[in-house]
Image 1 (cartoon, one colour):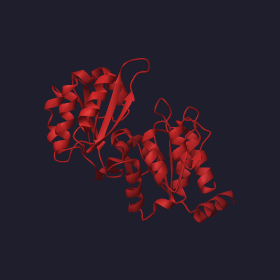
Image 2 (tube, helix red, strand yellow; image 1 turned 135 degrees about the vertical axis):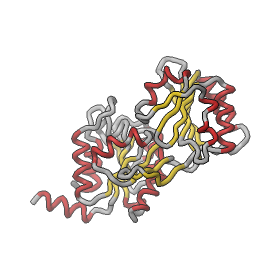
Image 3 (cartoon, helix red, strand yellow; image 1 turned 45 degrees about the vertical axis):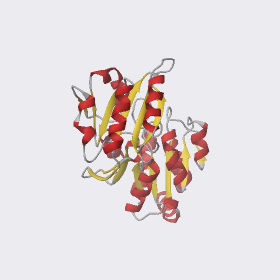
Image 4 (tube, one colour; image 1 turned 60 degrees about the vertical axis):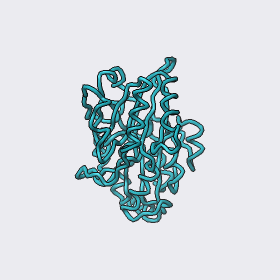
Length: 289
């Protein structure tokens, strides 16, 4: 009887798609999902709601969670720069850094002596200088390749472009590199900077081609299923989630999210990623379960 009542509740609900972030939302600090949240997502999918993932990770770092939920359709990776169909691992959408934009970015990294990682589709390339930072990128992909010289790697000239470029170094050098990238006007990339180690002068930047965000990926995936954005729900916890939180029909910020992330969402959860249950709570509130 309870199951039938829940099925009717979902049938009457205005929302037909649920999108979740991974790190800090579905996954804990060790990269493992909370069972309560997994169960809630599986149950929602079984009731006919489309479930997807929108994450900063590359697809190889997303596949495990997608399989655990039972997703076989499209998911958004690299903060919306790459949309992949889980079942056949086919690329559906890719915003790549290429041409003059790639040339400008490479010059800035070389000029300011930064270690870097090139993200392409589903793998990451680095050279000797990136080895000390490997722990910070391993969660994004499980496919990591060592190159003799990153600045000479053929990915810089690839026709499909790079999915993202991550650079790390001293805060002042990162700032100067970003200024160089944007010096001559439209850079063709969107750049975000972040501290790598608290209490240390180690900073990073991630560059992606303009045009791809978690919001554009959400819209693309919803369109694939014939669902308007007004009928979508999402859950996230960090600054890269702000576009989708603003774009979805209803959105939930995790309890540990910064104030500006909470301000972008329609709802704020009490639950945090440390204890879990945030995704399950969002499903209960949005879908009436």
